[in-house]
Amino acid sequence: MKRIVLVVTSLIFMNGYASQQPVSISRGYFTGKDFFEMSDTEKRAYATGAINGMLLAPLFGAPEDRVGWLKSCSANLSDEQLSSILTSYINNDPRQSTMSLNVVTFNAMKDACEKLKRE
Image 1 (cartoon, rainbow, N blue to C red):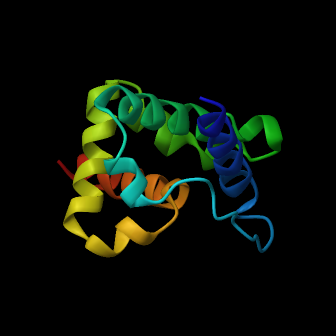
Image 2 (cartoon, rainbow, N blue to C red):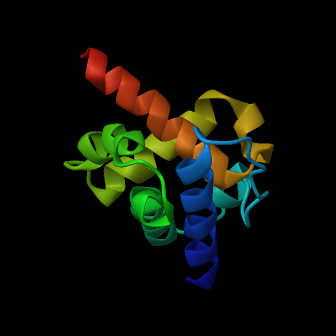
């Protein structure tokens, strides 16, 4: 659980300052491959925690409108749906298994939300 909190904190910083200045994104604590080694409960907890962390970005100075898309997109998604989005994203591109899970999670949600918006 401590790892999830640390990953979420990394996501907050990544999202909060992206539009304001160049950033260096921490490698994080997990990779896409690590996600597949988690139990279903851990996957759901990770996905939920990551989204919750990204939604806290305004507390660190990110403009509210920078997280609005995620807030509206994820509002009605269950933990199982969040985990499924992440699982599908990694499965559809094997390169994601070696990438930092914090960045993969952000990209998976961005991709899924854009697709949901078009439907």
